[in-house]
Image 1: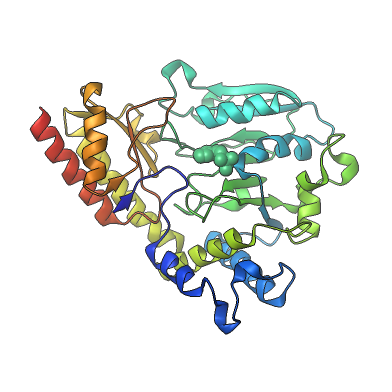
Image 2 (image 1 turned 180 degrees about the vertical axis):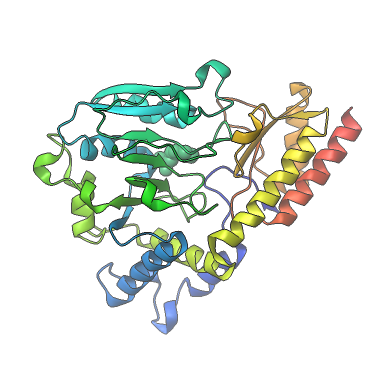
Length: 360
Ligand code: PLP
């Protein structure tokens, strides 16, 4: 079967098989890595290797900390203002879809939010250009979502925010293509798409943005402090050790595939053939502006929505799983993250062609 779920998403088969092998007896120790203390030398070596592999994969500069945090990407929606406002009362947010909206709603609880641009008027089917951004000089940071998972909308550039730190929710696009980390103040990503199992959120933050306790918003929980997490190697409390270990296996796998540049070539090819097929058909449609189409999440509609249920039942029977669009938008969505092989996209296109032929 091929899994097109938006998240938790497909993991590489090789990773699952290795985890299965190591499940009850990690490296001959007679117990599972899941059962070991997070402070044991065994787990610390797993944790440090995972971080180093991620640093290698993303070429993360030395002046950035990598944090393995909990609470999903959604907790970051609150942690970002709590940590990054640093006495300022305002932040800029770019709004390009449902995840930007959630981040904005949360930030509004803590500060004034300037909407630097929104594409709601076109139903979130594009991203604004640099010229369309109205940035404030006195913002503490600028937040955006480079890849909106639900709408399938991707920025084709990194916004220039001058000296104001840029914060990016990379949940559904991290490790899919090379990015220049030095352009960002902070990058965060819920793990359950291109990294590993849910329960972990990776935060990559420039060291000068780690706020001391007195620079944080009053009342911020200790567990929500990036500085506390950084000072304690992401082990202020017990971290989600098994998710961390599995993420490390995914990073190793990605290195074996040739790294991010190599997987990006495959990702672009996978997405291109699916979009080409959709655009060439009069049965399927994708509404997103071509230069803003996500290479990770491909939403599409059928000519007649009355056929949606049949499409989903028959695709599932054919081993093409989890193609339903997000509950807020309906239609279909194929999430084609790193772990979905090109053969999965080929099989999907073949199924879509056959379904259209017999339903037209
Ligand atoms: N941001 C984006 C872009 C997402 O796609 C998601 C989840 O799918 C989230 C945030 C929320 O992540 P979590 O469920 O880990 O809180």
